[in-house]
Amino acid sequence: METVTLRPASGADIEFCFGLHRCAFYQYVTEIWGWDEDDQRAIHARNFKPERVQIVSVDGVDVGRLDVDFGDAEIFLLLVELSPTHQGRGIGSRLIQQLLDRASVEGKPLALNVLEVNRRAYALYRRLGFTEARRIVDGPAVKIRMVAST
Image 1 (cartoon, helix red, strand yellow):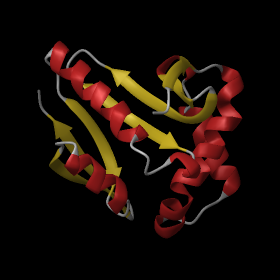
Image 2 (spheres, one colour; image 1 turned 90 degrees about the vertical axis):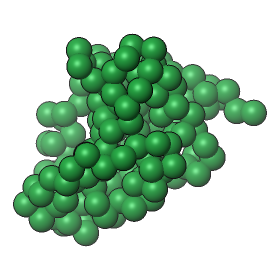
Image 3 (cartoon, helix red, strand yellow; image 1 turned 45 degrees about the vertical axis):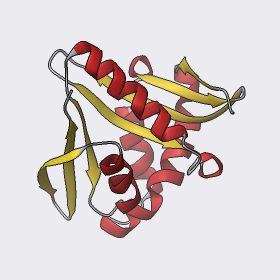
């Protein structure tokens, strides 16, 4: 069994995290808006909050990131991104299950948004017990808010 650990992100992780973003979202961003490297870098720089991000390591190698907002009323999963070589191995499910367990202990729902075009992620969230709360039209994109209640 692989050893999966989390470490706090630092400002030095911004380029690593952008590379993950490119791998994870290039297809979907291209399909919806078209990929513009400069725009995506600017958006990433604005949204990258190291104090909220944890770097996912497998057997000591950085392979992903987990970005979670632990709010007063809910826990919100902003992003879980893994390198393509580590997708489909149950790592994302384990990380999300840990969040579900924490949400249960804290008596809070765990919520997230997923792009409608990201069918693989949507299916994963459904398998893990999330249900659709609503659909949000954001220009040409449709985001689905999903919630797992405790």
